[in-house]
Image 1 (cartoon, one colour):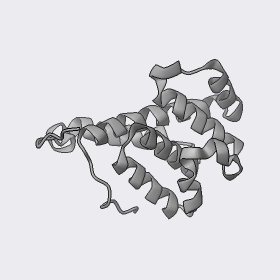
Image 2: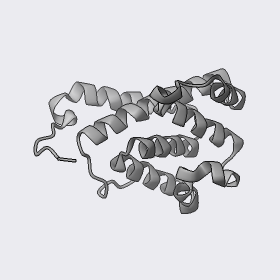
Image 3: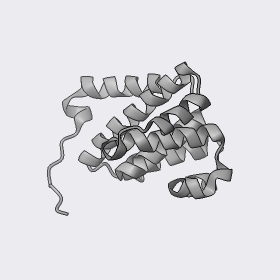
Image 4: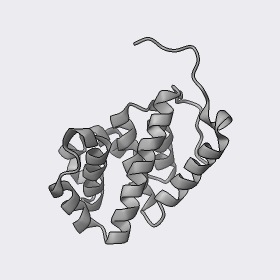
Length: 153
C-alpha cells in the first residue's frame, strides 16, 4: 500500500462540515449508556481499520471505568458473550451489520434482536450513533489520522 504525502485536514479546510460532524456526534449518542456507545464506536472503528478512533474510544471507555479485558475481547465478542450484556450484544451485532452493510445489508434477524433490546427511541439513537461513527472512521482512515495523542477529558 502506498501512502500519499499530502492528506487534507478537513477540520482546517472545511471547518463548518467538521463542526457539524462534532455536533452530529454529540446528539447521536443522546440517551444511550455511555459505555455501550463507546463499545459500539470501538467495534465500528475496528471493522473500518481506524486506529485513531479505536484508540480514542478505548481510552474514553477506560476513563468511564470500564475494564481493559472487555476492550481486548471486543473483536471476539461472540466467543466472549459473558463479558457483554444482552443489550450490548444486540448493539454490537447491529453495529457490524450496518458497518458492513455491503455484505448482507442489515438482516431482519439482526434488526429484530436490536429492536427487542431497545425501545424505538433507543434503537433510533443507536442507528444514528452507528452511522455517525462510520462517517468519523472514514474521515480518520482517509486522513491517516494517527493514534497516540488523544487524552480523555
